Length: 108
Image 1 (cartoon, rainbow, N blue to C red):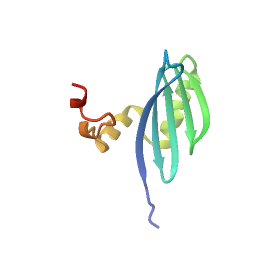
Image 2: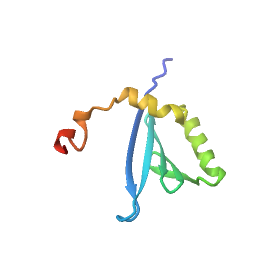
Image 3: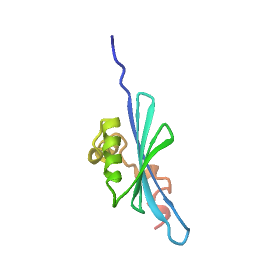
Image 4: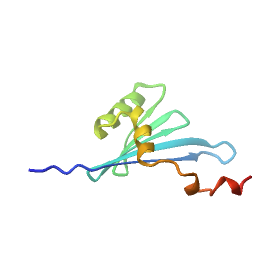
């Protein structure tokens, strides 16, 4: 019997909070054989684990739960968090001409 293995990496970032004092967040998503595992790390010192869009856990930087959620995400996805960025950027290299804000020449 042949096993089919599919893994897709994606990341997003944004801001939340009041307009006068926003905080950044980053989301790291691994789609593994159709299941989506998302780790969201917020600038306010929290992280959230969602599976297929449903939040399953939340932790805070000053508590062990933060590190437990990181370890759970790594175990579920099979990817060490420290390697995610490198793997993602290798698969999706940055293209300045494909920047959402357009080429730098628009602002110079």
